[in-house]
Length: 465
Ligand SMILES: O=C1O[C@H](COP(=O)(O)O)[C@@H](O)[C@H](O)[C@H]1O
Image 1 (tube, helix red, strand yellow):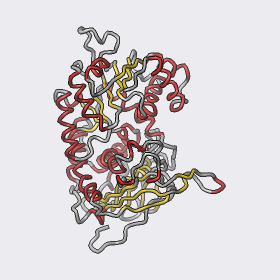
Image 2: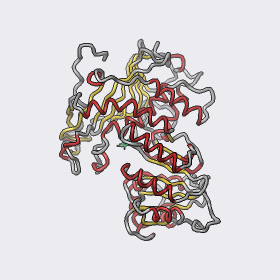
Image 3: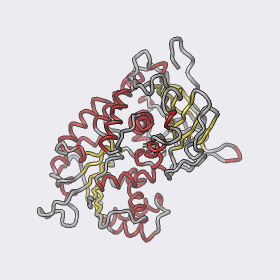
Image 4: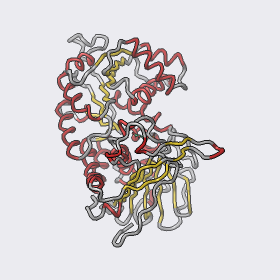
């Protein structure tokens, strides 16, 4: 178990909204490693007290459910160091700012978490390379891991150099893999479960992986406008969900076997040709509308995406994306896989829909929710592992997920991290789509905020949709 956590980007949104609250919840549940030392690093020229008071405020906002005494105890043990990725010495100093950490004899491993804007990853990794981290240290890198295949390959090369080629030391975070129900997909389809015999193309015509959100930008324009729906959630989280749904289950579910099975599945995804992209993908962005109810039931009016603070309309960023894929595997030949995500939609739908060729099979009703005679809906954004029809709670998955991310990172686990090859394969799948979109080969559709999404594509001659 690693007992030292260096949180870089400690004053930012990810740390304040998810990582530090996750630490508070782990602490409240008695699951934080005993004696864990936490040092926050960021650009601000702060001292420990200023950082502690900043974190206390963020925990009140985002971990108000955690008892005050627990939050105060966590805040009281935090340290802070000003860190500039352009000045490698500051990074090395922060990595040694633990009790006894500056003592050459004390070479205890450190978990370094890069909760930073992706543009800073290369510089920060370079600085960490110079910091001479102790053996056993791990470096967690958030998404998006690169912006395309070429940049992901370069980032993997750098990460490999910095971690001395020790794959376990490189922790590419995918917090969806920390969601209890995402991991429980493997159990749902395991041999012996009622759905196992029908988990193939003979029974299933279409699988939809959906991450449809009611949230809009939430003040994240700086990140989101440079990222867009595909790079934000599809290249990483949604393709990871696809792997768990569609991969061949390894006989033993060791981390190595699971990564190998996921990689094989990603390799089997047929890349769309330039001619296919316009008929198999849709992109859109929201216009002005109302979120969360209308008229007497209230509702919040939101401006159109291009009028949001911090958005540059010239970037052409999509807030909605849909991609239809096929897999070249014996199990799935003939099944359509639809990945669809969007922001500022009327109704949240986060999960997997199975469309059976005939009426859905009789199955244990706790397995999933039957939504129509020939469909099963598997809700993924819920805090518990069990499958309870109709459970809908606003975004609890992410809160639980980051606790799992930190637990895995500190305990040496790898279930919520993605291998370098998986990340590259995922870019291989989305790159042609992004390239075609950048060349305007696909129209940018529109939908009012609060609606179900853009209109469907016209049936096109030759289209297989
Ligand atoms: O990583 C991200 O995920 C969230 C969606 O996760 P959820 O658990 O909140 O539904 C998404 O809103 C965000 O844009 C993305 O960066």
